[in-house]
Amino acid sequence: MAGMKALLRLSLLWVSIATQTAAHQQPLADSRLAINGVPFATRAYWMRVANQALSDLVSPCPFGAFGTAIVNHTSGEGLGELVCIGANSIGSTGEIAAINNCTAVLTSPTGPYNLTASQAQTAFKSLSLYTNAESCPMCASAIRWAGFKEYIYGTSIDTLIEKGWGQIRIASADVFAASYDLSAATRLMGEVLTNETDPYFAWQYDPEYACPVGCGRQKGSCAKMK
Image (tube, rainbow, N blue to C red; front, side, top):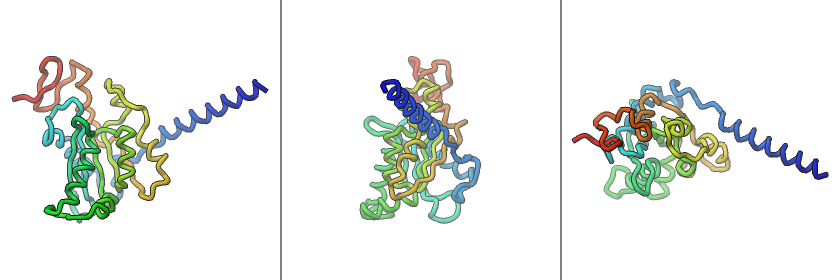
């Protein structure tokens, strides 16, 4: 009987590991395709805006170089409309900062939208969140709770780990797979424009890696050039 229980435990463990591995390896949409009617060139444009949010809000080379842009692709033809940006700061990640910024923009009585809190929540279902690195489980969950139409990231968690970053090894795809009870659906597109996002996370733990444009090495770190 003890042997049967041990075998059952091993079988359940194998099933758990296999399930987690399968979820982690689920393929993402090819980022070069036109998805939801938005071509890759437009996706690349807004990912660059997410990168630019670092310079606009903090520095071209902050240590935590996580930038975000939230976009309305339903506002008509063309690239779409930028609603707000966010960047990593003390006490707030890029994604959370952008969500908070957008809520303030959407509900401001003197702003262009002047929505109620409830209307702002509904508006997220029409918006796309671009972030230059894959979100941690906390931020991926916040994106799902907010109910965005799309979530597009650049550098993957796996790449961040390879570059020396401490990360919780839970992919956004796994968070999304576990959020099927939520009423709103969010389309996930990963590893978009990584040739431009990866360098923002490659210099922090590699003293020989070049600093981002506009920055130089000072005491082993990268700092904005004066």
